[in-house]
Structure formats: structure tokens, C-alpha cells
Amino acid sequence: MTANTFSDDGMANFGTLEALTVRHCVLPVRRPRAHGSGRVAGSVEVIILELRTSDGVTGWGEASPWAVFTGTAEANAAALQRYIAPAVLGRPLAAVAATMAAADAAVVGHPEAKAALETALLDALGRRADVPVWTLLGGLARARIPLSVSLADPEFAADQELLHRVHADGVNIVKLKTGVQDHAFDLMRLERLRADYPDLDIRVDYNQGLPPFDALRRLRDIETFAVTFIEQPVAAARLETMAMLAAALDTPLLADESVFSPDDMLRAARARVCDCVSVKIMKAGGLRRGQEIAAIAAAAGITGYGGDMFESGIAHLAGTHMIAAAPNISLGCEFYQARYYLENDLLGTPFPIEQGHVLVPMTPGLGIDVDREALAHCTVATREVTAS
Ligand code: MG
Image 1 (cartoon, rainbow, N blue to C red):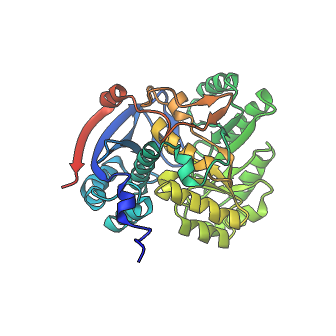
Image 2 (image 1 turned 120 degrees about the vertical axis):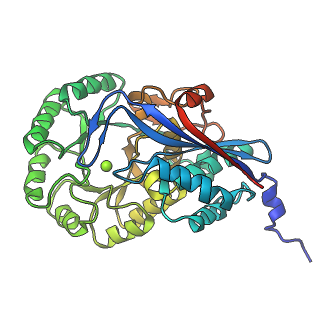
Image 3 (image 1 turned 180 degrees about the vertical axis):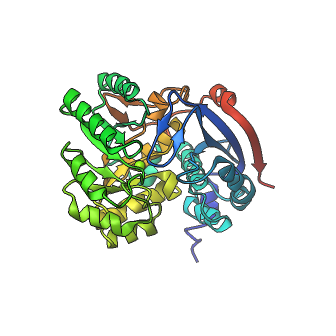
């Protein structure tokens, strides 16, 4: 008889999950923002997860909820401390998929908390195995990701200043947040952007802000500005309206709020509600689930885009590794907050952006360490749970 080749002993060689520290953090932002649904002013709140293994390896993860979109910081902290930690502590670090299944079985929903957990697992496993996270997700499909910066300031002059600055840094993609004030305001801003930057890659995002009545006529006006895609014009649940708009418009229609999970993606593909989809680890509940969404989209001829929530550089890094290993997420990413929106980020060295592209880290784990002093400065509550 030969020994079982898939033994727990083999997995134990990478260590087990010993402790989870859950920190509730408040991150000041530079300017107010307005969207088709939801506003931001003053600060955003994230949950930073620190995982420690029996080998003394540390892994970091982040849950970046937004109350009007995915969930709340309080609920995600509770999900991690009270439900997920007891279900996953003591498990082998290498058993990432099984550990995520245990987290799913322990508490429904809370995709941001699960994204934080999977990020921390992959970061620790990558450090332990001395490989970047993207190697654990299928290997490198791209080493640079085009960066889009979002324009959502209630005062257009502030957005123009921001664009001037990021364009000088090499950024040539913007996402204009529309459907907040009136249609004339959206057309005026597009006119100015096209006049000032003729070659700019412009996308628009309504964040569900258009009523179905008159939506098609307004979007036909938007099309005259040659935008690359139109994102989530109507409410998430209005799949029939999305499908009608996708069929009627020449411009690709992108689904964001309509697609959180692989199940949602399958439904959206069957109903032909979109030409492209925003894949976010905070909606999907992790990096691998984001890749599953991208794979279903690819099978349906739908192209992926790397979306995010209001995140620090830690979650940006997680999204970067996911996209690095996902061939179908080819429309760029929007990981700009760490550099251009937060007053202070949490990474020890700046989130890597060069000439309008995010550079995929080639160092073990997520590739950049957390600045513990910056983290302590923004933490308002801490709770550690250990394996008993
Ligand atoms: Mg969006």
C-alpha cells in the first residue's frame, strides 16, 4: 500500500491559521463625490484583516464595503469576528478553496468580508511559498493594467483639475459619473472633455441613476461623444431594460450593480443584458470568484473590466493580482484611490502606478507590505480572534 498522496500532512507543511485580527479603519478622502446612487464625503470606512499562521507568516486582506452598494463596515467586521473566524481558524493555510467554502457555510452574504479573508489567505500562502499571488491564480496574463480615474466631483472644475494632474502622469482613461444632476450637466461635461482631450478614452457610469423612461433617448445623446462603454444606466434588478438598451445602442453596455456573483453573471449572459461586465472582488466575495465571473463572461463573449469600491492599496493589490491572471479582464482597471483619492494610503511603498498603468508586483504574496504606523493611525476598533 502506498501512502495517501493527498494527505493533510502535506497541507500542514504550509502551516495552519492561528489568529485573525480585524481592524475597523476610517480613511479620510480628498474631495466629496456624487453618484447616481450614493455620495461620499469626508472619509470612507474599510475593514483590514491581518492573518497570522502557525509558521509566523502574516497575510493581509481588506473588506471595502459601501452601504449603498454592497454592505456596511460594521456588518463585515461582525461577519469576520463572530462567524468566519471560528469556522476557519485551525485550518491548513494551503486549503484555500476549502477554507472559503467553510466561510460561505458559516455566514451568508458579506462578500467583502470573504474577499478580505481570501486575500489574506493568498497573501500568506504566496509569502510562505515565495511566489506572487498571481501564480496561485493561474499565472501571468498581463504585467501592466491600463488605469482609469473616475470623475465624480459635484464641482466640475475640481474634476478638471484632477484630470489635468492625472493626464500629466500618463493616465488617458476616465470614467465620468453621470445621472446625478441633470442630463444637460452630463452633456456639458462630455463636450468639454472631448474638446480639451480629443484622444481621451471616456467611459460613463450612471450607477443606476437613469429612470427607464427616456433612458434610450438620453443614452443616444451620450453616444455622440464616442464613449467606450456606458455603465449600469438603470437599477440593478431591471435586467429587461438593460437587455433592451444593450440591443438598441451601438456603444457597449457594461453591467456593474446587476452582476455580483457567478450566478448573476450566468443570468446576465443568458438574458444578454450587457456587452461587458465590471468584475470586483468586493461584489464577488474573493479573487477566485471574480475569475469565475470573468470565465463565464468569456464563454458568453462578454468582456471584463476591473472595477473596485472605495479601497486602500491593500484591496487594489488583491484586484491587481486577480486581473493579472484573468485574460478576459481586458478593459483596464480603476485602482486610483490609493494614489489620487485617499489622504493617506496604508501601504509601506506607494501602490505601483506608472505612465497610466498599474504595474503587477513580481514579489511574494501581494507584493507590498502594510505600513503599520499608518494603519494604527486610522484604526478605530480592533479585535483579535485566535485558534482555541
Ligand atoms: Mg460602477
